[in-house]
Image (cartoon, rainbow, N blue to C red; front, side):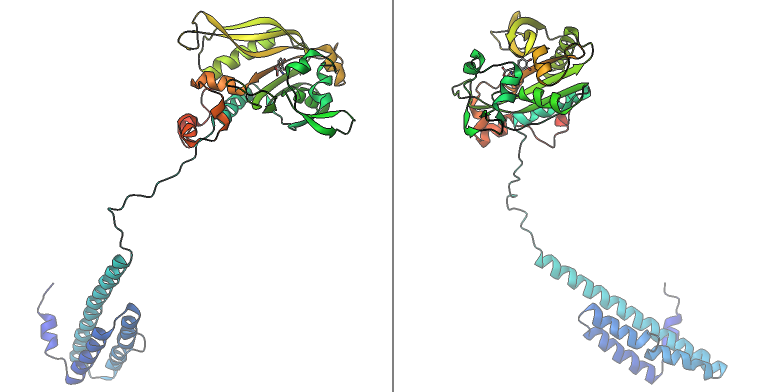
Length: 368
Ligand code: DAH
């Protein structure tokens, strides 16, 4: 704010101060970057600066002279500070302009494409069923894809010349395993039942999702596909537990609270009794639910006493149920995917269409 005083005091600026003001101002004008400007500030106003030295000399003057000289020095100091501030503004602006020029962006250019991956429907199904069974207290186990004949067949009550071996078009590996028996690409996840019962004390509650292999290739069969095995072993496990567990799972997985579920008597060598499980659907529309038709979806049963005994468990003490289901099949049904083959062709258009976005909140384990 103008109060007349600086002007008044300016009149008192003596020649030496005017000269100092002029040289300092010239140096300020000549400073081309903030460091040079700061050096000028320090030389004038710093601890041992020229103006500071003059201010320190005031003490030696008589009071009148001191007042007059002091006022003049203040004018000088203010003038230099103002010049420094003004120059700093100019330099800052120049620096900003230089940066803006250097970092110039052409906003009219198209943005680079963002490549987002997608979760494969098989992995999505495995995640979902793991979450559902996980909530029921099941743990996940894994085992080798190349499996001993004993684990894949014999221990599961499928003896050497049992017709089930032919059903399953087995890939045999060259040579034999440590027990002298053949090694195979596992035709089912059921050997995980054997491995788990041998390795763990009951009670047991596991699922085993994984790859399985059969020499079969057409629109509905792939030589490599996925199954999930389930096994519950405890005292006093009944068919009621099996039915309740699988009914709850199927309703949660397909997201249909009243999905009809039917247990139909069947045969598997490793369960007795055995049951195939059907869900309700409408054959014409393909819609799941109470559509009047039945669709077979998985195999299950009470673990055969001979299988328990093969794993060293006393069938009079321990009972349990097991189930196995095809992961491609339940994935195709849930998402209306018509053909099995593209699951393993790696076509990005298919993956984009049927894959799910890992970052979408809808995909963070819903429906449990
Ligand atoms: N392993 C059978 C298959 O591949 C599926 C299966 C049926 C598994 C019944 C089970 C079961 O555990 O109890 O066709």
